[in-house]
Image: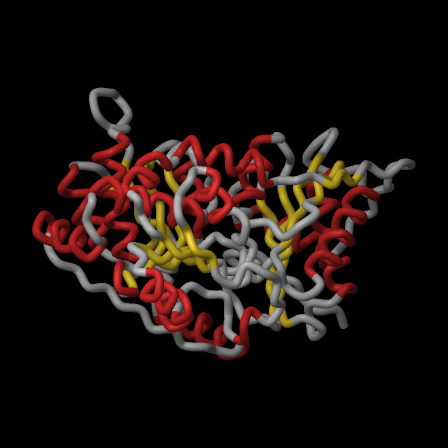
Length: 410
């Protein structure tokens, strides 16, 4: 019996060699290819991957399969961040993207994430159609000639776009000393590369491929940032920056190596962007802020202080991506360290989050702890917490079913 392939909030993920096999990858990609081919006359896809075990092999297979279905594929020749794929989908007006990543999950996992033509994570109505194609393949004839697979460097245009959106000159002028840890992930060469181009001093850690990610998940949570903290202390850095396996999540250490929670970073960045970008000043556009239901109410307090609306969404950045695409918000974020902003991709971008945090520190000439105390004085003090409880898939299914039975709105 075939393994059921279901797409969650960030795609389909499974353990390599158990469920995540070449055979199941082929099934999943065939379903995606049939769906994409049915939606466009001359379809194209961006295909990328993070540095996990065999990801480049899976991506090459995916491009080959999609090409057989008449889909032109732009295949990255190297590991690439998820937000870069989202950016390239939009820039090239592609019909979507296939990304092999398990993001911040342990090394034994890999996954397939499908992004829509606007660069946003696929919505449930799209993934349901893909799942149906996987479970019950439609009988469509393949074109006589396959489409091309074009090896494409996705890095330059994305970095040029970031350089326009972040005030790198402020970071350079402030003389900030930074340390960056990509946690062996796809962010290596991106964030530190852009800082180097801008003349900003930044020490880099773990900038090489290790499919075991140093023995712990590539998750920029506090308990995984010990080496970053030590490097900050040794170099007397002002700020420590980290991204996860596919560089869509961020982790921030203040001076002295103090961890600042994503909830607090999101609130500080919202306050800073309202004041520095002035998107709502002197015009008719009245943008708000987007946050998932699990994200701190400090966001609400900042929004009240500035007189802007709050849009609360279910968990899953795809819903915040919709708000960005509809141009309703200045910033959208989740407590799980995902965020994006107006005029950027409707997808989490950990690289952007790190750069904006550095810009904020450089502009305000205060540590993050000092800025947080200033914010508390303006809007009140909030101290959100988060506890991670590892659960097996059967337990998660039982928990979800029980919750739906007991809570009608779950």
